[in-house]
Image: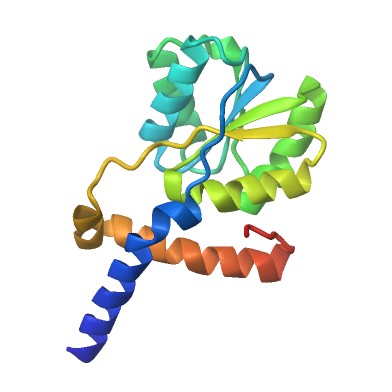
Length: 180
């Protein structure tokens, strides 16, 4: 009972302070490419497709094992031409998303990119991409939080936020990523 109560308090505290600590939203300007990270596929695909349809960038790069094909499919279904989307389907984590995307973005001649990922993942994702590709100007267009904090605590969202804090610490130790 005590462990369950302690876990509930930790998740509630992590969620309560999560937006100011984890969310990075930047002003968006025209870019060369929209980079969509795998995971939470449909929401990220729809966000990126909306940006593409607004004309903010002419190309899209989807990166990540598991759902790169389905993200591309959702984007095509949302009006993005298939030929505008490149995929990188080997990356198994955020660091690899940045590492494996780097040669593709360099080959595209990209100088400005917009990163699309879940709101709580933006700080770590931007830090990884900025470390691997410091020559690019990075902007962030997160998939916004759709649940109340209370709902997140009850659902998996709270656990995802709690894990993000641990991942930020791990990425700092493992890869030298400074998210803060």
